[in-house]
Image (tube, rainbow, N blue to C red; front, top):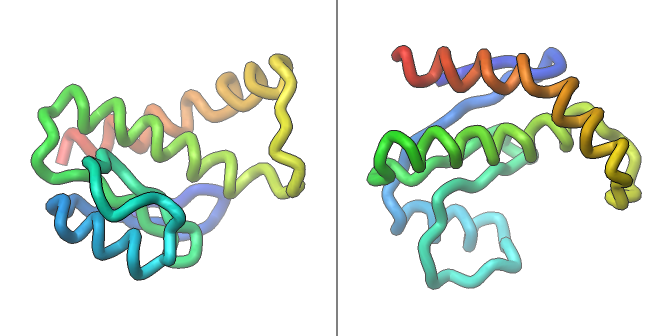
Length: 109
């Protein structure tokens, strides 16, 4: 599914675990090749990857989580990633409707 956030085009793709590991290698991600990855978010290709074999509830919570990364990386442009409690509450309150609308649309399709 394609979506826009802050006027940037993004894509959500469901892929199997083996492809998740390939994406990690492709992006030289510091995470290990082993283990299970529910979701990955890459800004260079503006794509969120979800494990296609997750149950609906886990897939939904993973998408919410990955969209949180997407929101922060798209709207917060300062490099210092030290957030106060007030910053976190602002992020949650400002992103809630945006993220929820994307998730609701994704699971309707």
